[in-house]
Amino acid sequence: MAKSFQKLHYSLFLVLSISLTLLTITKAKTNSFSRTLTPSSLGLKREKLSHLHFYFHDIVGGPNTTTVRVAQAAMTNTSSTFFGAVVMMDDPLTIQPELSSKLVGRAQGIYASASLSELGFLMVMNFAFTEGKYNGSTLSVLGRNTPLSTVREMPIVGGSGLFRFARGYAQARTHTIDSEVAVVEYNVYVFHY
Ligand SMILES: *[C@@H]1O[C@H](CO)[C@@H](O)[C@H](O)[C@H]1NC(C)=O
Ligand SMILES: *[C@@H]1O[C@H](CO)[C@@H](O)[C@H](O)[C@H]1NC(C)=O
Ligand SMILES: *[C@@H]1O[C@H](CO)[C@@H](O)[C@H](O)[C@H]1NC(C)=O
Image (cartoon, rainbow, N blue to C red; front, side, top):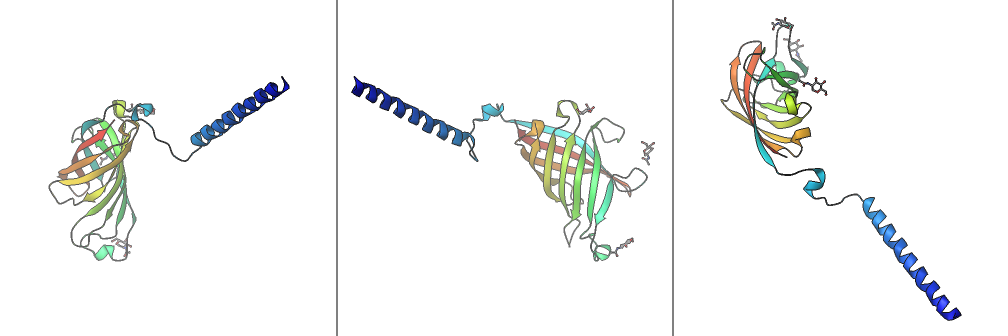
């Protein structure tokens, strides 16, 4: 009798220590640095392709300028390509070429003259949308823009909100340009969920 009680005691102890070990392993897993998820656990269903079309207004002069040169090099003034100039922008994006048409967002970021031999900008900017369901969502652009080319293509390297996991490209075409304002037509093609 005493012997079988001892046996029971022993097996209870064994079960308890195994459970404790399992608990520790599970806990270690949830505390671990990385884990694998299914896309659906983040609510991601099917990847879709969207096309966005808008006009970008780069206002470099006048009372309502949307750009400011924040840095330059000693040689920038004598460079035919403004090499070294760094400009910060907060440019409106509208549905039609007219600035007075519906605002759909803003292009916020930097363009910097990065070519010695032709007009060529490094573009680092976010499209911050305010239109309808896209309000609050952003797309990030990192690319090369040669404004004198008919079509410039820049990669979309990511996004937020409705544009999480975004990737794609933007095509820019100059619509009109004068000494104070450049209006640029953008067609953006982007995969996202
Ligand atoms: C600047 O903005 C003001 C206020 O929106 C507007 O009345 C004015 O016409 C604008 N000026 C130019 C040159 O666009
Ligand atoms: C470049 O030219 C501008 C105006 O022409 C002047 O204000 C600025 O000081 C010059 N910068 C350098 C680094 O020479
Ligand atoms: C976008 O969202 C912000 C914050 O929720 C809100 O204040 C703003 O009015 C919205 N804009 C548009 C155009 O719906």
